[in-house]
Image 1 (cartoon, rainbow, N blue to C red):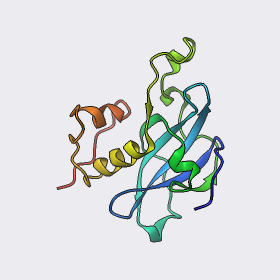
Image 2: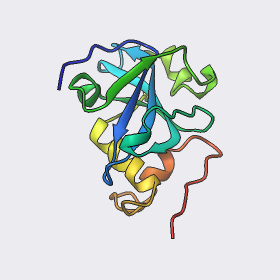
Image 3: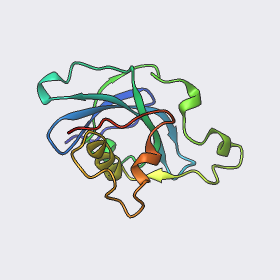
Length: 147
């Protein structure tokens, strides 16, 4: 896969375990936070044939994330658009004034597992801390429960 360079506003697909894709967007490029990117992930899951159908209506998580899976092209860029979320959803705004002390960076692989778990493809409580995935959700977001 070709190497991709990060640009704020990049919209991309995250492949998850069943072969479907979840929509994401880079909303900040934060070199000061261990060279991470702030990404928002949306409740927009599509099959490989539907990847032109994007929906930014329901953000579910906004996290500082390692950039490896984006840079390598695993998270495939599809467009570049203005940020599709309000600034108050950006992570750790209060810590910026303190030099980002207290900010947490999530591995891009962990985010893929989280998104798979959100859609019922993995156990929601699989992490050592059974509330780990729950804490990645934006306030007020309910997990989709598949039965």
